[in-house]
Amino acid sequence: MHIRHLLVCSLLSLSAAAQAAEPLVRWRNHTLTQEDFQASLQAIPEDQRYAFQTDMKRITSTLENLLIYRTLATEARKAGIDKNPLVQHEMELFRERLLATKQLEAFEKSVKVPDLTAAAEDRYKANPDQFKIAESAEAQHVLVDLKKHGESARARAEEVRVKALAGADFAELAKEYSDDAGSASRGGNLGRFPRGRMLRTFEDTTFAMRNPGQISEVVETSYGFHVIRLISYQAPRQIPFEEVKDRLLADAKEQYIKQKKTEYVSAIKNDKSIVLNAEAINKLKLAPQAPGAKN
Image (tube, rainbow, N blue to C red; front, side, top):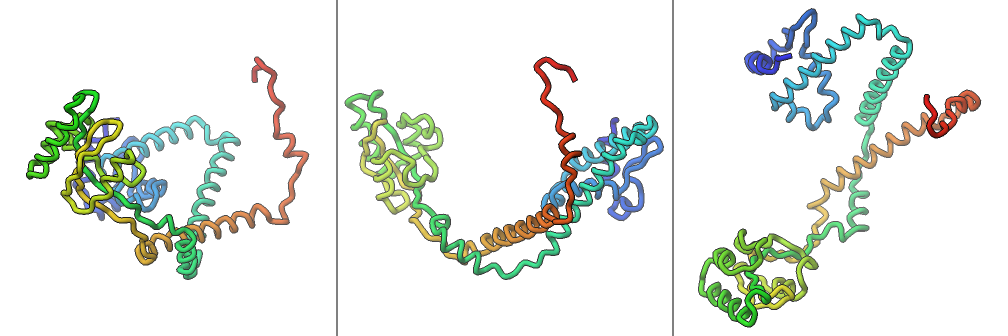
């Protein structure tokens, strides 16, 4: 079915009003309408629907799928598949699942959420470590490999440091001198890292610096000799409640509604008027098949 190109052209040329009034697609004795498309959008999370409708490829793909489903469904009716009692029960169960889902959505929207500020504050106070910005640093380095350069390794690292202190571009020094292939191509940039990520000596030297652009002494680690340039330093900080209040309130609201929905469904499951026919239910269970047995 080669409708994609035609759909793109026609959909772009139609106004929203025209789309609502006219079929989007015609073929054989069928049509696809604006209502069909809108109904199909209900399967997409509400907060993603706008983005979905800005993508013509996804729109046309949806219409193609609807076209296929409608064609196959029509052929199934002609073949009498819809008259099969079991298929009719399946369709009714599908209808009930859909309605049940819509009822839960309506229930969620009907829940009156109280002021949850106190609950949000309690969570904030009970979990202070969750609301801390850890100490971190962003740095560049030049590594001179001891195994590669032997006794001249420290002198080579000192040479880099002298040039860096004299104002040479540190990124260019890293590209020329560094034996750390992973960072040399990035000008020695190691990105931002918290304490505990790097080797202890390297880390202690880096976190002792505070001023952006500061150059360290030559530092020795098991990898060799390093010259480190601090890009930025972030001190540890406790995030104030007001900065995370909205997020905590949103989480509290979500949990409150989830709990109410659980209670709503549990009330149905635990209804004392439910009568189970244990004998009939037990008959639903099949005996395990012997190895090699056929159905």
